[in-house]
Image (cartoon, rainbow, N blue to C red; front, side, top):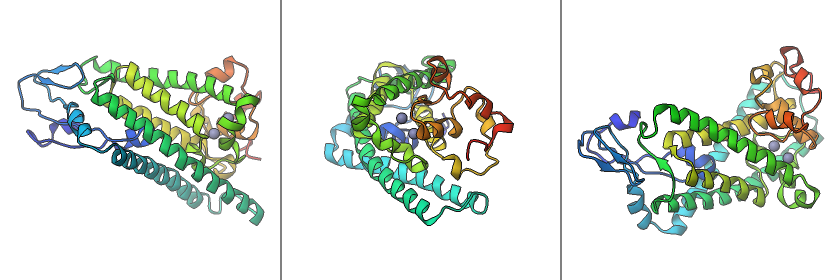
Length: 319
Ligand SMILES: [Zn+2]
Ligand SMILES: [Zn+2]
């Protein structure tokens, strides 16, 4: 890691903002001591040899000195700030880019859209609180040595960092598909998922708008993964960043996208805005998160979707 080559013999505190902001939230402090030839205990049951090694045991000490309430508030603010920056920034860029390229909304459409955005932001504030609790739980588990996070890139081999990244995305996609379909059951929908569907025309602000039960399920998945699957910190950052970016891209409604948006780049097997926006318009189809596999396998894919993602189909669904 590039960080490991900076400032020998100094304690470097880094906030893995993107990671923890994204979903779990929080901050991990890492100590780098690249010149020490002696093995260093990493606080994760791993011993480091002569290679530079971040010392995650600092978490044990930092946790014990902190107030739970203060940590919770800080995590909440980080996660909420991440949401406001990424969703708000995307929305602002889209409006800037779409000026003159996309049809102007009528006053009534604008009023409905703004109401939807206000609702999404309110719900996202609650989601941020839920994910802050999950982040606190992860930090506490880490302080107890109960997570499988590790810091040495070669602990499981470099190949494992890439493979574990893909494996977590595939697992998350499967869990998301199953729970998402469950939330659409009439008995659960009103309590668990209705809030996310309030906007028939989603915006990036919808990307984090979950009813509290859904937010709890999504956050708990991440806590369980961190507790059960050996993950390098960089893998965790990559997974959480992917979640954020993918959620925002998927919630750019076709009406807000320029006509020439390259939908075909997502291809047949990756979910993009053309796929997920159909779910917001017709909630009986398209339950997946990253990959179209489960919708295809479980026959919940819109019948005309495959043809629409070719270069010739771009924009044809926007009407
Ligand atoms: Zn959605
Ligand atoms: Zn849904």
